[in-house]
Length: 146
Image (cartoon, rainbow, N blue to C red; front, side, top):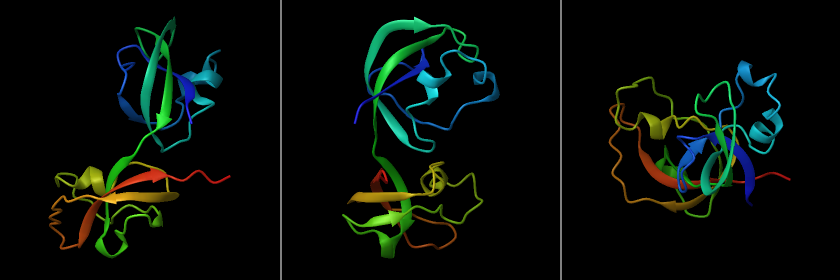
């Protein structure tokens, strides 16, 4: 489902992806707050499908913001191997790890909201965990609860 939102001019490129993390304090008084934040769900990764010509001023983005169309995007994450089954619906919970220097850290702690996700596919990526966890990389998509 396509959604309309605003994003910084430098970031407004077709096929760019971002994880929406919510508004910051500077957004509270902005007249564009509802358009910028009203359609997006915190922790969901979005892909820009179209960039429109319209630009608006923004106190966060020095070059302003553009109107863009976005769709929820798939996301690669690491999960326990025993849960890595294509088509399975999972409740996301980060892998327990504090090793920010690990090459897998961002896949184990992807900064997405806890919630329900569907495993679209199990990827053929070797995941070597320094802690010895048995992990698989999977492609997931959020399941919107009605």
